[in-house]
Length: 238
Ligand SMILES: [Zn+2]
Image (cartoon, rainbow, N blue to C red):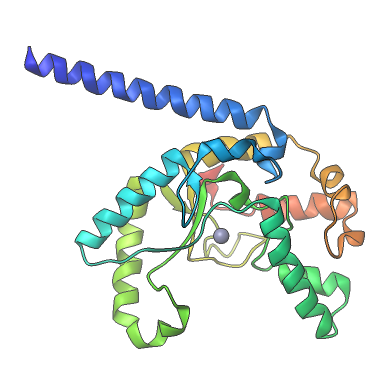
């Protein structure tokens, strides 16, 4: 009897979680501005103070961090949810740096998009993505190679157990962004958001925004960018 009750309780909670996830997805599905980081409607779906992620993603990450720490592995969150405005600040800063070095608009954008997304096209807008590191301060890198290796081994073996997968892998056939060993995606949600995202007319959306260098964002340019950068991801995340 006791056992049955426990099973019933577990089933009830898994049902609640499923319903909450569906509710979240439905809200995001119906609001295209959430997908491009422009809507405040995502705020109630986010959890966290020092960094923000969708509730399910946040909880999975905290559990992973806690379990890793038990094995002596520290996981630091470098970046999580980013709004359109936040991404645009990063974009503008990099744009000015490369333009001041004498690069043309086209060369500048090529250079920025080696690692950074055009605002409105970043997966960080979705609240499902996170940049992780075993260092709070990346300048310490060379001094602690052993710790780094331990972290990388642990992540490779365990991150997927918590739902996290690398997006920009070192697969040489992958196009778009360079290899990012730090960027993880919470597949159970991001997989569906990608499908919704691809339904948007991104070229049209970007045209109405004030983005440095956007004069070169023709329909053809953005189509190629979507093909290479948005779709140039780990096959498992489709
Ligand atoms: Zn990232």
